[in-house]
Length: 93
Image (cartoon, rainbow, N blue to C red; front, side, top):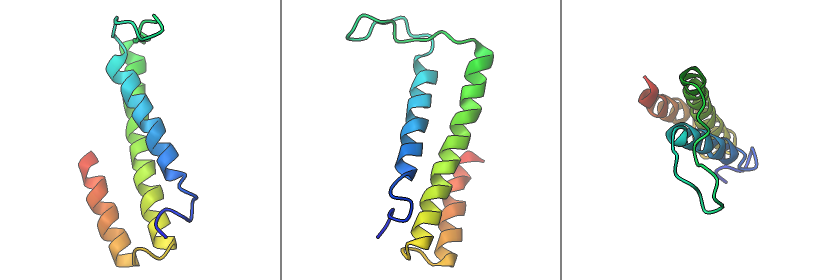
């Protein structure tokens, strides 16, 4: 029953992280979207740096939520939980 304990809420965290990443990528974009609005928000470099820090926290939170969910749902053993958690977190180091 993977993903069931938290009612799949970990995917909402992933969605938010993806949206923040797009804000970072498009910050200085002057192109217009399909409604005629400029895509970029043009936040200061200091703000974008904070977005990047927040993005990392969100990505880690999603990993933790997923791994804990699978452990509690019985999809992973404690050993597998620790192994997968460390493996997924290594991409941030």
